Structures are given as C-alpha cells and as structure tokens.
Amino acid sequence: LSTLQNTGIERERERERERGERERERERERERERERERERRREREREREREREERGGGEIRERKRKRRERERERERDREREREREEREEREKREEREREREREREKREGGGDQRVEEKRREREREREREREREREREREREERERETRDIESDIERDRDDRRVECESERERERERERERERERERRERERERERERRERERERGERERERERERERGERERRERERRDERKGVILRGENRRGRRRTRYAETLQSNHMFFPPRSSTRPSLFHASRPFVHSHPTPTTPTSSSLQQHCAFMGLQIELQLMIAFIRLLSPTPLLSLSLALRLKLELVCALEVCLPTQINSVPLPSQVSRCASRARALRQIEGDFLVDSAIKYFEHVPS
Image (spheres, rainbow, N blue to C red):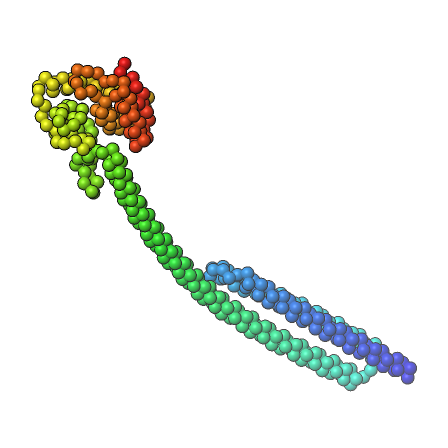
C-alpha cells in the first residue's frame, strides 16, 4: 500500500513538474512573441524615420524600397529559423518525455491494460499538444498576415504621401516661380518709373538751365546796353535780339583818324563810318590835303605809342583777350581827343594831360579794369 501511495505521489509530482515546464515554455513563448512585436514596432519606427529622411528622387526611393524588402526578407528568414529551432526543441522535449514515460513504465510494471491506458493517455496528451502547437502556428500566421497587411498599408500610405508631397512641392515651386516673375515684373516697372522720373528730372534741369541761360543772356545784354549807354558808344550791327557786335578791330581798319572835331565849326578829321562819335554833327571832308596828312601822321604816331604801351601791359597776362585791349585802346583815344590843342603843330599842355587822366579815371569807374589804372599812369607820362 505504501509503495502504491509513494508511486502515486511520485506520479503527481511528475505531472506537476511537467505542467510547470509547459507553463514556463508558454511564458517563454509569450516573451518571444512580445520581443518580436517590439522588434516590429522598432522596424516600423525606423521605416517612418527613413521615410522622413528620404523625400529624394525616384531612384533613391527605389533603392530604399529594395533595401526595406531585403530587410523584411531577412526578418522572415530569422523568424523561420526561430520556428525551426523551437520545433527542434519541442521534438527533443517530446522525445525526452517519451523516454521518461518508458522509464516510468519499466519502474512501475503492471498489466498490459494499464500500460495501454497510459500509452493512450500519453497519445492524447501529445495530440493536445500538437493541437495547441497548430493553434499557435495559426495564430502566428494570422499575426504575420496582419503584419504584412499593415506593412502594405504603411507602404501604400507612404507612397501616397510621397506623391502628395511631390505634388505639393511642385505646386510650391510653381508658386515660387510665379512670385519670382511678379517680383521681376514689379522691378521692371519700378526701373521704368525711375528712368521716366530721371528723364523728366533731366528734362526739367535742361529746361531750367536754358531758362537760366536766357535770363543770364538777357541780363548781360541789358548790362551791355546800360554800359554802352553810359559810355555813349553807338553799336553797329546789333538789334534787340542780341546779334553779333561789330568788333573794334574791324572799326580800326576802316578809320584813319582818331580825333573828333571840337565844335561844329571845325572840320572833322574822321571817316564817316566811325562808330564812337559823342553827339557831334555829321563829319565832313577835310579842306586841305596837307592838313589831312599831318593829322593822319599824328594819329598813327599816337596809335603806335598806345600799341607799345598795351603790349607791355599784356605781356605779364597773356590770357587776356586782344579784343579787350583793343576796346580799351579806343576808349583811351577817346580820352585823348578832349585834351588835344586846336593847332595841329602844337603839343598837349600839362592841364590838358591832366584832363585826359581825369577822363581815364572816369572810364575806370565804369569798367573797373586794371588796364585803365595802368593807362592812367601812362597818361601821366605823355608830356615827357
């Protein structure tokens, strides 16, 4: 009896150990499944990360897709390898269990009926285990199928997002090109507006400059008229529109005499075209040829002296115009005419030279030239 009791206790302990072993095996299987699920999540996360990093050209996307396919294929190979190892381990475990059963049968002994009963029990247990294994296999296949479906959905969504992103980028590029064209158009309009304002400003400047030139010319013309009126010079060849004034050199070439008459009773020694008559009556022809020759000689002599003086005056300032010197020369001749004596053969008196210097000082007040100052000094030495 005690032997039977001990045998029963031993069998119960053995079953308990087997149940614990099976429970631990199922726990390990669940842990492996959780590990695979975590690995799949990490793989999906890496896929999403790669997707974010991609956004490249079609060839790059194709290479990455093939790389993902190879990764998935390697993952399936690892999964098959794990299943093969688990199957081998399970077969080994079953073999060990059968071995233990045979050992137990040998120890226990007994009739054939009881051995057969135990064998059938073991067969039923193995059949249940195989059924559970098939159930786990079906569940695993179901999970893999779901995983593949999810991956296909993810890949499809990724392709859709990529196409949408490409379309959005293309639309954004088109909008950027449109904005660039708009900026260029506005820039061209601003440039045309700037050029138009610049042309208008330049045109206004030219108009104002021409207006200033006209005003300056008008002022100069009025100033010349006032100055000529003060000096009593009658201009020849000039009208109100300011045409070219007759040069004094031309006037000199047309005259041989430089001394106007003192009164209406005295014959004139001047040619009729002389332009600087000071309110005298119309000149007349000289009465004596000898008188005319003598006056011409004196006039040429004075002209020569004046020319020498003006050459000396102009030598330190070569930039002064010759027309200015000729103009002042004629003014000095006009000053000489008031101090010449009535008799042709006589010479000027000191009082007459003094009047000549006074006339030159009056000219200086009108002109303000330094040449007149020099002429004043020149007249002071005329008697000597």
